Length: 530
Image 1: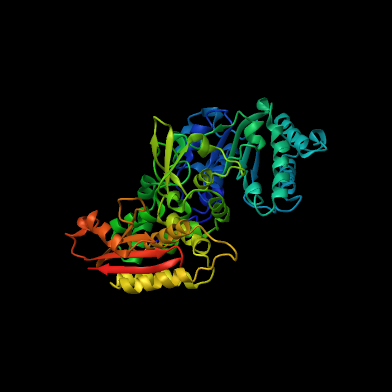
Image 2: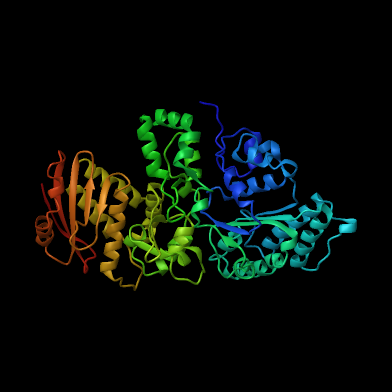
């Protein structure tokens, strides 16, 4: 043990600094943003450090100088002389938790923040707060804070969209009420510039119909700005500068070299990009957990189930094979989101399941893909009950045994297991699925999940091998056909030269043709050649 404390799940800047936990210095962004009086909005996925950054802003505006010693902002602020570390009144709304499905859940949270503020700053007697509505009370608190302290007020709202995401599908009626409350409550900030020092909102999604983006159209959405690409998450440089002891300990625990350990960290947790030319970042929640537990696991993906994403994908016309490999979007699509929009891509991006991998300036199009293996295989695993039509434990076990068959050079056993797996899929009574679409989704999912254990190259387009699976000792070139002779599959492998790139490889090579029947909805014929 190296004795260093990882701030896993910690969102309180003051606690992290006082308890001497490992902290990656993000105060350069605090300094840059607070040089202006512009109201900002920042979107980032869950567990990416939004709340910690908001807490850092709060401590800075409260003038807690001692917490920033040794950080980027410390000398910058001290150079301001008499104006350094000025304390401003702060109203901070942290909305990551609350009973938002309850009729008064959201109003209770908002009212509680105002009540705490009234008590903290002693807004009684001369500064008694009146107002029959929450909106008027909010306005009065701001004005009285300004009048009592003589300084502008800082407004921080973290995870503003949590009350909406929590109720969007489970309780649409309450979601509409929560949205209506937002429209009135935060409209209190409109025309209040003279009383406000700094305004900062964070969230996962940008709901375009919520009042902070319609009534408060002066909010500057910096989510896609290159200048703040590393504001949340951990860059490669930050990883290497701050976590060398943890990398060494993890490498030792897993029996890896230092270089191989970093390579695996990249593959599992790196790959997020939040601007067209921005630096890549690691998922901080997963990275800190891996260092704390000294194990590679899907920590971030396992911390929540993406039911909303699955529902959005099911309701859309986008093929499963496109989600992680062939997705383009405009900036407007990435920034804006409405529940009524049938396009799932903005939600996939904003929630962190897709990330920017390229940009075409001529057409102003962003290319998107899965950021890393944690997200890709975690999401694909979550689709198993929906695509393969079963919800018991048998199928994940079957998938593992299928990989073991390929690893051990047993393609016949692999196909037998594939046949049994597909034969166990029960379709809803009375429903006749369009089989070619069902077949391609099922096969794509199965072969993609094999890539969690082996190197797979999945190409479902004409002229490319349907799938190439590589294990330490074997290479398999698959060609799938629907309602055609198996000889057609084998002939295509030969005629198109699918095996040519691997003939110099020392591993044993198998050519595998598999035929599916739309009538029987399963494998009906197969052939293997060495």
